Amino acid sequence: ILSTIDAQLAIKHGADGILVSNHGGRQVDTAPPAIECLQDIINVVNGRVQVFVDTGIRTGTDVLKALALGAQAVFIGRPVLYGLACGGHDGVKTVLNILKRELIYDMASCGITSIDQINKDVLYKHT
Image 1 (cartoon, rainbow, N blue to C red):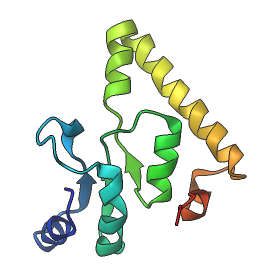
Image 2: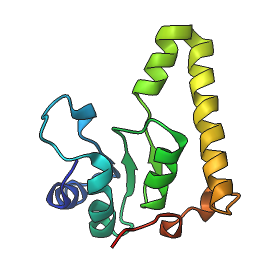
Image 3: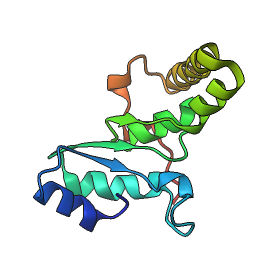
Image 4: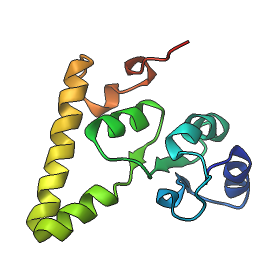
């Protein structure tokens, strides 16, 4: 889902959660980035269902940004697949450990020690 209208329809029809995604840009190459749609969808959902995001999550910093914008969780595709292709099970573990270390480092840079402390205050908005 990339639009607030679709998010409202999903809730109306009984969805328990929403995945904000443009499917890696593979389906419609002019679709907006999921991260740019996330905030509007979070606002319209207003806590009625959980909101997840994928597409473009490549680093721990990307995870931090998505959580700061209000996503309850992020889905990670390509980095994990790259790890799998290069190193099998151990490659996947390595990728996930790298993402975890990046997230912990970024959180520390923001002065926070827990995922629960991540909020919009960690983001810089250029005006």
